[in-house]
Length: 134
Image (tube, rainbow, N blue to C red):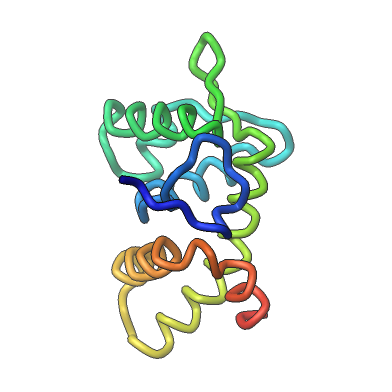
């Protein structure tokens, strides 16, 4: 049975925390969707360095969780819940990335994977983590 977490960011249809990969997509979509712009799957795939079918599948998952929505012609936008989740992950991601890279001396890609894995493990403590990293 899926576990629910009290601090799950009030995300509709989300019974378990996001995977590290899903968090990465959420952060990339947030960048693309700034100023009301949307993202095309092909642009997300290129940015994530994955195939278009992989990006499409993850975006479909985010849509099913009601964190994103896709227009008829393929432009993807974050929902209000998606923007809220992305904003909280963003407040943790950059400072944690900087600290992890400094302490562990990892290259950028390895550090990104470690930070996303950490964030995926503490969905109920993101607000606290954000305050501690500020």
